[in-house]
Length: 187
Ligand code: PAN
Ligand code: ZN
Image (cartoon, rainbow, N blue to C red; front, side):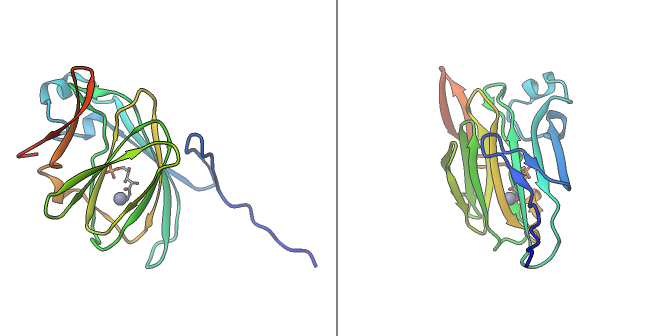
């Protein structure tokens, strides 16, 4: 009996790029990130079309139990002394978690609970990050090459950006040539 085998999408683990028929891509530019970086003068000085990160993800069916898989490619760079980072979010459905896998480059995953308590995990090729429910998450590229991380999350999770309008409790800057975590009072 002949078996029928479908070819699934593929992800290249050295750079996180997908080969698939149905791919969604979204570029986030510095102009989209008003209020995210604390040095507003440095942010204004950057051309707003400067690409900060790109997400490529597989199209998935929507609904309870369905999953997205997608890679974030975060460029290296700084605005002022603050490293490039994603906007960061809670999931709209707070109980829904996510898994990140470091693929390329080096950086940090900033995690913050609803009480405002923040912590970092080191992201590097092969690192596995279990993001629990009710935990906001942001990638920060502290290296000199693109930081690529693969993520898997429920399609029903949704993104709540507004809950973090005040920002995360920690920022990551280059100070005296060193990567430095800085506590923030008002975002
Ligand atoms: C990721 C993020 C991606 C971009 O796919 O959406 O890294 O970050 P922002 O959504 O904060 O701009 C994910 O965490 N999805 O749930
Ligand atoms: Zn998420």
